[in-house]
Each structure stands twice: as C-alpha cells, then as structure tokens.
Image 1 (tube, one colour):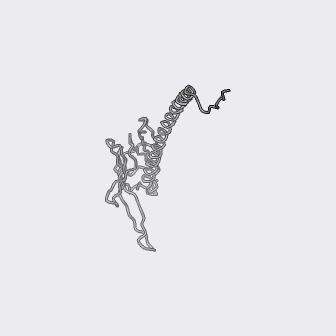
Image 2 (cartoon, one colour; image 1 turned 90 degrees about the vertical axis):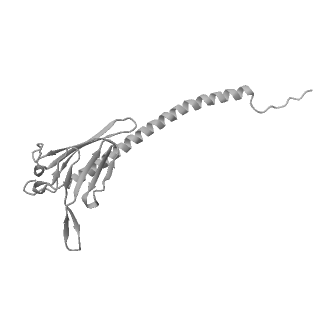
Image 3 (tube, rainbow, N blue to C red; image 1 turned 45 degrees about the horizontal axis):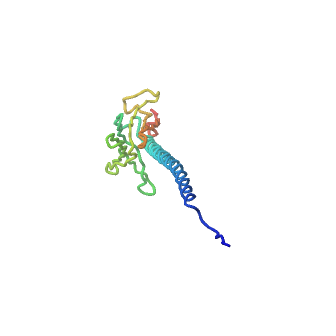
Length: 188
C-alpha cells in the first residue's frame, strides 16, 4: 500500500492569482493616496496664503491706525506706498514720557511680490510682511467718508491687499477700513 503524503503550501497558480489581486488593490489604493496627498498640499498652500494675508493686513491696519492725523498730519498719500508719521511714547525714566515720531513707510514691489514696512527709527530697514503680493492699494477718506487729497483731512484709510496662492494662482483679497486714532481732537 502506498502512503499519501500531506502536502502543505500553495500551488503556483494560487500564488500568481494572489499576487495579481494584491497588485490591483495596491494600484487602486495608491491612486486614492496620491489624490488625497495632492488635495492636502493644495489646502496647505491655500491656508498658508490666507495666514499670510491675515498677518499682513492686520499689521498694516495696526500701523495705519497709529498714523498722526488732523493738523499734525504728515502723510505722503500714495495709492500704492504711503509714508506717514505716528506718535510713539517711550519712557525715558520712571517719571516722564518722551515723544517719538517715527516715519513709517509701507512699500510694495510687484516684481518680487513683496510687501514691506520700514521705520525711520530702525534706519528704514524694511521688514517683509508677505512675499505673495498680487496688489495693494490705498484710499483716503475724510470724516464724511468722501475721498480726500488733503493730508490734514484724512480720518479713514481703506486698503485692499490681494495675494496669489502659488499652487492654483488664485487671488485671495481682503479689504480693510482703518480709523485714525491720533487725530487732532477738534477735527476727529
């Protein structure tokens, strides 16, 4: 009598079929993973651009709010790169305040796509606010919200900042109206 041996393992056909099925599953799942990764990267770029827009807009608004207005106004009322004075108070000793009026310049360079801010007290060294500039424009208004060309009549500054999202090229913009704080009390 011939004894049958127990065989353990897979046949060649079973191995080939299982490898083929795993290959199809891997190809399908990799397309899903690649698509998910691309969406994630696009959202990350959009989020970074939005963060940059918020930072630059908030910083410009904060600086413009402190501009000296009224009869003490010292504005270069440019539609693209304003220059103005603001009042800072620095404590020189424990008892008195020293008035400091630095000149602030908000600049832009559309070729390099940057927006900068510079202060006369730091030797006009420009600090970059964003490097994704598409456009930046300023408008100046008086107490009645009428457009004005007189530096002493400026009470509100409206600016629009638009940045370009690098992946899609989509423009993201924000418009901000700023009321000046440091106006002459009889005019503001």
